[in-house]
Image 1 (tube, rainbow, N blue to C red):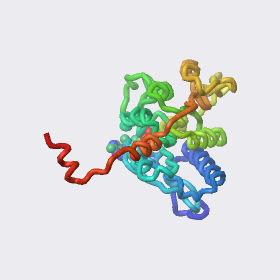
Image 2: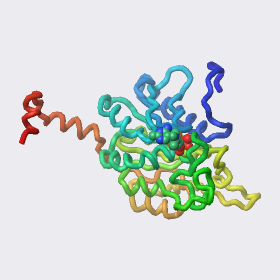
Image 3: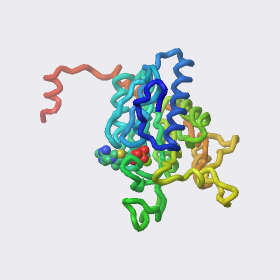
Length: 288
Ligand SMILES: Cc1ncc(C[n+]2csc(CCOP(=O)(O)OP(=O)(O)O)c2C)c(N)n1
Ligand SMILES: [Mg+2]
């Protein structure tokens, strides 16, 4: 998979959308590194478990730091990194199963905190690594190894969820439009708060959706993906909901809070007011 390291194998299938996401993430991190004149080690990729989790192995040569953590726990790990080292740029690489199924309980609390990280969520509507079971974003009736008679639940609209729980930056991209995706990720990293870039990243082996997403005029298939109008105002939450209501897969920035206060700023301010206590004082404070 690599000229410099021919023995290394990314374990992504040919055509996997995650290749495009990796390239976009590389471009975004590279741009940030150049613009801020920072070493690449100022960046940390916190990855979940899944095909998407391989995003932790990012670049050739100098690498961002990477933590390949636990399935569903990218956000708690990212919170820990950010609390210990608020100066680091933390990017999360998660799958739709990882983020929206087992990890679902963590999303809203981080939105309320406005944790200053950028989560890149790769949506292929399946659990790719464990052989194609349906994920929350799989559609009603979809036949998978875990739903042999069709999925009995309707699909989760992830963008609507992110807007509803108060994520302060919500963008939607597709793995095949690498430059656009790189810019959405770059903007998400720049945004001082909880950013989510939800990416359609098809699984060519278990659920190949390229044709549905891009359309095929010869077969009369209309594209699901469409670009958000230039006149959309991302600071308007109602307009963001209207974009989602139009259906399909909108591409671009849906919502961006104009004046977000990142969690680390609140914590830093709180530390200035917190009074240090001895162990004895602490124990006594718990005594009734
Ligand atoms: C706690 C826990 N539960 C289940 C698993 C098994 N497991 C590994 S990856 C995965 C699903 C991956 O799906 P997704 O997050 O969508 O990533 P993809 O492979 O599609 O990129 C599961 C269920 C695990 N590793 N740990
Ligand atoms: Mg998946």
